[in-house]
Amino acid sequence: MARQPLVVANWKMHKTAAEATDFVERLAVTLLPGSVQIVLCPSFTAIPAVAAALEKRKWQLGAQNCHAAAEGAYTGEVSAPQLKAAGCEYVIVGHSERRRLFGETDADVRAKLEAALAAGLRPIVCVGETAEQRAAGETEAVVTEQVRAAVSGLAPEQVRRLVIAYEPVWAIGTGQTPTAADAQAVSAVIRRLVGELAGPDAAAAVPVLYGGSVNGDNAAAFAAEPDIDGALVGGASLQPLGFSAVVRAFAR
Ligand code: PGA
Image 1 (cartoon, protein in one colour):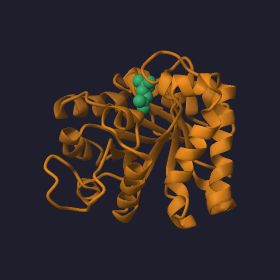
Image 2 (cartoon, helix red, strand yellow; image 1 turned 180 degrees about the vertical axis):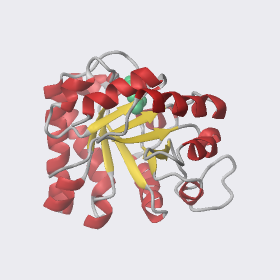
Image 3 (cartoon, protein in one colour; image 1 turned 90 degrees about the vertical axis):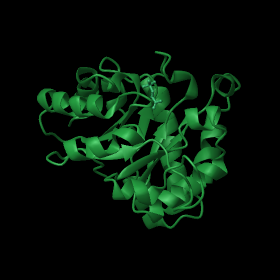
């Protein structure tokens, strides 16, 4: 059950191509090669620059979104095959900002996930409850529904290519987090459900990340939990020092 730790930087709508390149150079100074798989997810406009900057490194490139169609008349959209051709290995799908601000449904997320898999990308599927849902005791039900919508009916070998990020909506960008024990409990629910839907090998293989106000101070507590394999990092990923502190917390 040796899953490699995975720490993903989600820069959201930050950094120009030049700023993203500068980040890579500075991160390389603060981080020695180690056991953690690092994925950087810049804006579309910075993807070519980061791809070039990553050529001599083991870190990988991801995008923050893709369209469900491989090509077509979708002005302003970017497809999964375009991302793959630009050097991406990963793509985030179903981030709560996409669900909340851009109206993405579970069905949209599923369609994007399938497009990503078809293009040879690894989808990072985000799930998580709102503050209201948590207060109503619905966390497990909400996360179960979202994971089921993403995973059910996929072949086990497809499920093995997924990454699932548990990101409580109320923890994103707020400085608030669940306890590591709470995040572990939800991560265990996710892994058990993946097992029910796709079998024990898939459940053992799928990395489950925690996301939501992760930083260098709290990452070690999440890293100590058996079902939390890494982190999806927003705000703290914008500075090389802050991001490398999270990476170090997940290093074995
Ligand atoms: P945050 O964002 O680390 O700034 O809370 C995490 C995310 O949205 O993926």
